[in-house]
Length: 153
Image 1: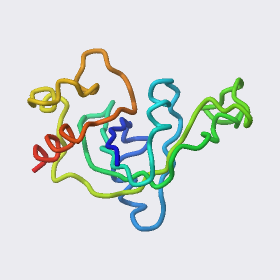
Image 2: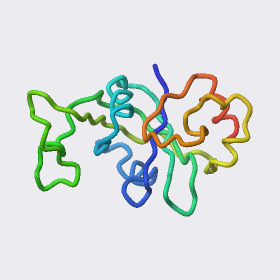
Image 3: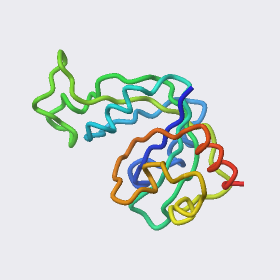
Image 4: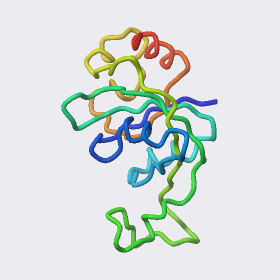
């Protein structure tokens, strides 16, 4: 199983939103409009674990873990003219964007802030801590995953 990190603005979808749906249903992870992030999403498979990283908010950092419950499928918003994620160049025959479904696993004992992540040995290759990286979906190696979990406590 692969490991991932997804960035989200908590006002749109937070670890608490996933927790509120715990046991009842998954949340579609859609609206990604970056080709590299989309390509990573196509690699996500059922059972993969994912860190949820809160961004563009007061408390930025890794907040919890979700699990992929449905692998990549065409993002329905790309076909909907009323959606903010509509893409007039996408067709059902040739979709450009993907979505995955994810479900709550657990909140971390504490939020791990970006500054703290940047200072941890062994995370130098994690795209999240690299200057200028703005990807909303990225792979996390098994070693990086363990370093972050250990830091969470």
